[in-house]
Image (cartoon, rainbow, N blue to C red; front, top):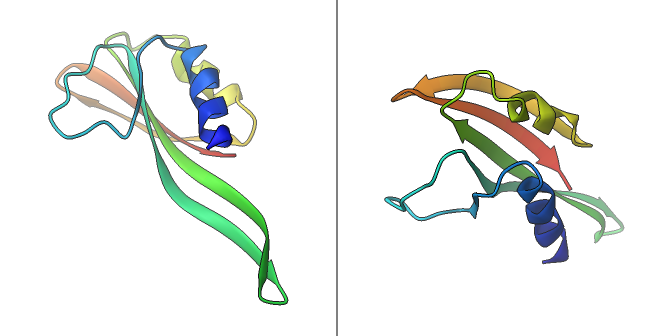
Length: 99
């Protein structure tokens, strides 16, 4: 899927370690970005899908609470930050992006 590949390229501009739906137990290298398809928004008319957008969930994980990428990712088009939280001294920031 070209759209997902384009998103991956954009996310790599923020962080070297980008993972698409990594399996449980996969050894992550921090800082990193994990992203996954969350849902697909389709618009229909006359029983035909004429517009489709993927909604992706993005999580940026870092050891630095002042990492500039936390705010930088918010600047992507059609992206919004959802929340932040800390687990095991790792700072997680979650976003939703539509492509």
